Length: 194
Image 1 (cartoon, helix red, strand yellow):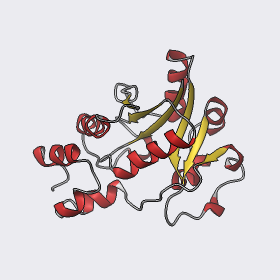
Image 2: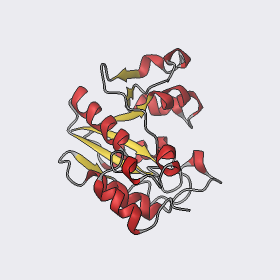
Image 3: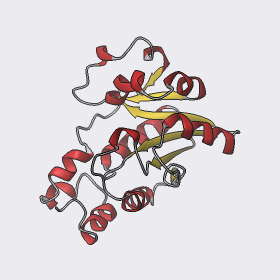
Image 4: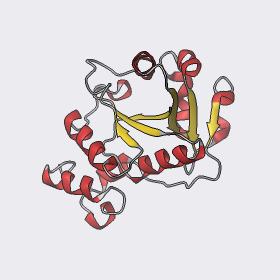
């Protein structure tokens, strides 16, 4: 099978994440997209993030009704920081019959040269890049540019988890950027309200 993997902090998961997954699914004829929430993202160590169990549950709720979206808990159960290279190695050893495609936004493509063992990641998986508003693609390093397969003519949406956390008190805005189930979960557990 052709499996897209979309990892992240998902603090919270929003329509932009789902749209990225759907565009990659269609553009590259993927069978499924696996959302992989990181319990301890290495780039967020020392920063305040929502508890991993809440982020995992919000991802479950967000993908519940999509027949080709799944949640993979590999990074959730891993102690310590979750590095993408380790996740891809684990996925290859567990699901060796599958081809994996790493789905990332253009802003993340720019940062790829800074990733832990990026050369190995590029050997083990194909990278699907999703355009994001305001990202200058000329900043992409020549060391990674040839490895990126872009979703052409995709829908660009300018939304981020940090925007959602900042605007949590405006419920009319939030209802349209997170799924109703995620919105209700956020309200039930008073997430992002402090």
